[in-house]
Image (cartoon, rainbow, N blue to C red):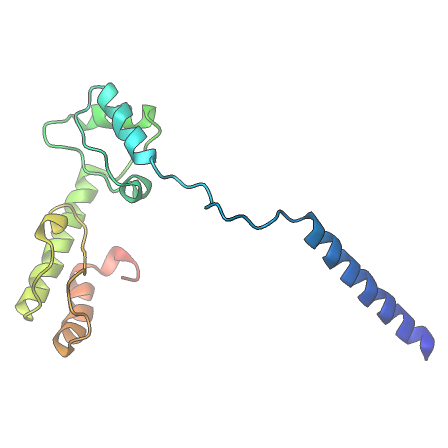
Length: 159
């Protein structure tokens, strides 16, 4: 009987020793934040301007998502070449961005028909939607939102 217990005890002891040794190898906790992409968009914007593209710095989130719009009057090919040279995203095509804009505007119009207003039209014109300031707990919102999403944002994946 002791021969069957001993391997289990040894295995448990070895497992505990392994865990203890791995804990000893781990890095100590740090109060400093993990390095992030903060400032990447500003660097990208500066590089784009150096390349002759007149553009304002996007947010880091916009840069990371690739959802940047090419400013009016800027050649799309020149923008894409400069962006690639600056380490930025290739981004969505103008046609895709136009599709997103139509979809977001359709969603907002659908919601307005149901009496839900207050969406940021300037964001919709860029193909994005912000629900900031919209009371999403009202019965009218809860009834209209799924139907409007299904009709206008069905390919947005899980919104």
